[in-house]
Length: 467
Image 1 (spheres, one colour):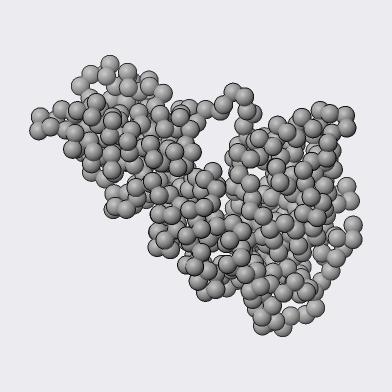
Image 2 (spheres, rainbow, N blue to C red):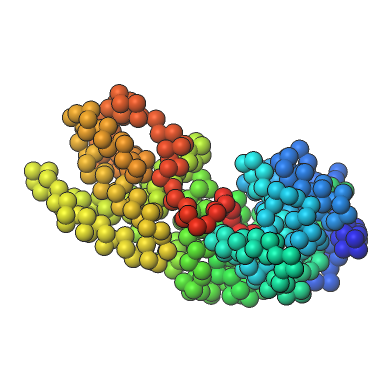
């Protein structure tokens, strides 16, 4: 419990913010005592946390361990938002956490984490660590989950391939994180906010700043450059000049980043409700074309599709992965469809399908898209050509609506109507026809059926952004 006591010791008085701003320069002064905001000095309240997160925090605390809410959840709560995830850091080791929560699973390859499962929510619990290595992807977690389960089944399991010194103190755990605003801790023991890196000042001033030397942090994990630009766009913050200059110097490293992580970041961007602003920031900084070299997104029509995705997300709609990724290809596909249509309106289907396949193949390979995702994008886009005219027969509508790819095709159809490829009259005709056959409203269940189906030999868990 020594770690817990040292982490909650109040820092000396800091007049205004001068001392803190000086100390939080780059790199962070590791000798600086943490700044503590007591409960009356901040607006984060337990009632803003999910009940599941509260349960995990209190069980750890009452079992004698440190228990902090950490990362983006603290940032978002202090900004008055609602976090998507609630992550927790503790001095308990993974197997100790596992013993406290029967509804949990140890995951991770380089560094073991614990996912505590509740109905509709996963709470991620990690031991304080000192290692600055980039986070693993959900695919890494899934593979390691099987290994951890096998180890638990052995009476005297072999020691996991983890170096002991990756575990650290709360201060080390804060300093190995990416940006100062993501390194704030909420201590369930006394409801204080603990700041080891100047994150409170940066949060108040609206600044995105790396912890430590920005060049070194971006070399460690190039995806951090995209995250910096994303946070600035999503939160309306400014990027610290040193951090911005480092992005410009190191942006070529993006092309060397892990493909699964880049694809994951893209999908998270598209589901954020602010994809248009984030894409603009990525494009302007020169990282989008390096991260997604085979995605066409350089036209006004493409930006319009992003705006429609944002509007849908804000309204509560759930888009499948094929719909989101396929939206990038829709404007170019519509050009191909026009080129393969003769003056009588007949489409050369064979030629169009060949050109569509040629267009999708580079991205499918470079982004490691599954065959199922590519199939749904391929069939969904091609189906739009069958919907350019008002339907003549109910049988035609019903036959198409029964296809497994139809939810994706309908998303593309709506996007195509927004960019002018489908006329408003045809759009309304299809809506009326679908209403007649009982398929006009695409339910969440139908949309989810268009998601990539899990491979049978793996037990997949809901994906979460690595922290």
